[in-house]
Length: 470
Image: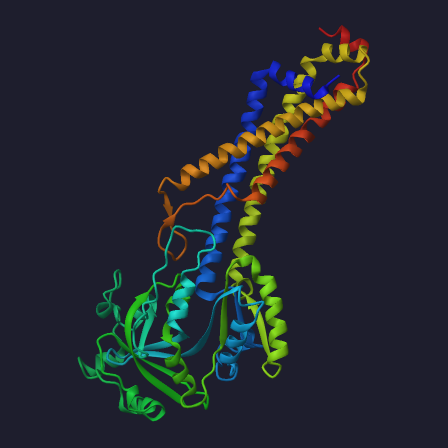
């Protein structure tokens, strides 16, 4: 006796109940897959942002991540040029690495002495051409292009500010910022000095830049200019007049209120003066994110062999950005809750369907037992009905979810991530093999388990009592 064929005929015989059960399973599969595709897209989006601006891996001097962010001189990489050259020539790393570029992070005071205002700032010196190449990375095919840096094509004395810092330094007008009003309370220095009294950089501060860098440090005054004051490697202060070309939103207010983007040469001049320049990190961007373990292992071996005198450590983007792991954990928890809820609904629905089938088919069960069908085969019959429901529900659920995701992806809908401009709404279902396989297998297992208890009840029925049932 072919129990699988018999199980299929039993499902077709009561189409209404089977279709109702399948609808519940399809809705559940769609909920899991669409939410899973949405959370997967957010994960890829976060990862893409971090990789575009900070690379996959960073080489830093040992201890810099925990203790050295305020002391670039002590934790700088003196051999950063040699390390980059070794990476670019290594036969293992060369096909993996897209960009290898130095960066220098420094802390100081940014001031607009013409307005009598200043505040602490965080400067980041970069190689603009390398950063533009990094911004072109799009490992997950997002339909969004990031513009090049505003510093592209500018001289070494230029800078980019966070919009919060530009607001504090009263540069809303010169930079033509929207939604940026002047401060309600005027700084005391400006109020006492009067209009134009503080228009020029104080002579003592200007002398600091002239002594350290030569006359070129005193750049011509501009309506959108700031002075950046930082401590040099010797501990003495150094200052540079910077022409602000643009203010850009940085996404996080705390960072937006302190960010100053510089050319690497200008940042090195501020920190090291006439001494040999250093970098606080070497940023590596890879072809694909899944190459991180191989690239990191090779980097650690290469650095230990070629540069034993330079104590360094290699950190990936997830270690450098704890928020990434926290976001992944949050969405994993939400996805687990949704999947558990859907599993409970499917368990109840299929179990109820099979229980009703056992009650309605009592005479049939007694007849089958009287014809010699063993209890094990009877259990298998009902289990196979649940299995078939799970397979059909999973296939239809995946197909419909993939179709709905395709419609949403091409609908033109957008959403706004925190601190970003509106981006297209994308649900990633098709192509996510792990998500599809997990949902399919889970749905089939839940449906099969739902039929287990009703199959035991059917197999335990007494043949005579079952035949007398009306």
